Image (cartoon, rainbow, N blue to C red; front, top):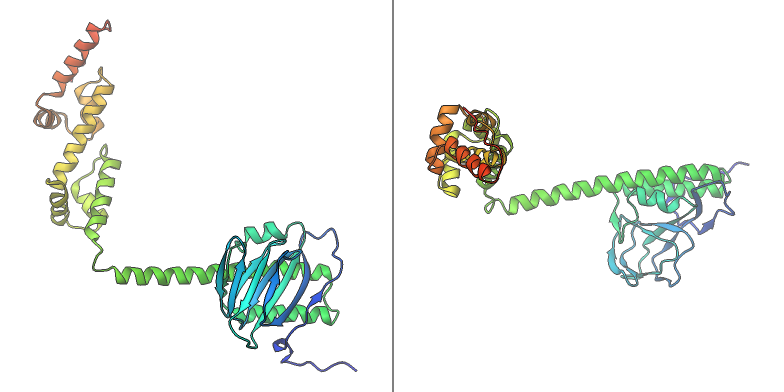
Length: 313
């Protein structure tokens, strides 16, 4: 007579169960599975294979000699690596449950590593109960003789991927909440003008050769031209337009130093300025016209034995 299905059996304590000898062709296989009541666990020589631990209601302290110790709470998981000593000390003699899945195979370590689960210490697992239920279903499938070792290999692989996705989702949510709290707590200290100024300067340095106007920069950082000018005056003592003009003239001067045979027109076009305006602003900035500087550089080159090639506008 077929045994009646017990809908509550997934909530019962699951005995330790080995799965037998694995097939050597399997890169990933289920070595053992089970749960035990919360109690002291000491493994000075570690375990033969990787282990996934699921803390359903156990609470205590996990210790890995030489690496550290971590508090353990309900709804968490951690992975034990083969041959690594570890200890677990419960906080009290409660009926907390700790589940474990032993995972063997030549690819077990690389799969867990790629999934981001070889992490020291426990991590929160979102939707914990569904994973506990799936672990129980796997145990009962073995106990009923319905799951072979090839079937469990596929199940374990999918189980690892789903746990990795759950952990990632949980940690992203926690990071988002931490960032939200941090922003809220530091709102008074945050200076939005500092970020806008930094972005404006970066844009000017990146596009000084383009037909870039200050209003374009202001729009890009979300400020009005007047507000942006105030920021520059507070931090540099000049307006945004003056800063951008100084930057262009400085870049033109550096370019002419590196290209002594270039023309004034080329220098002006290189920094996006009209040539006559460029000459006037260059003289105001450096005390001499760019053409005079070119002539002096060419004269210096001639004295060194280089041919004199004085460019025109």
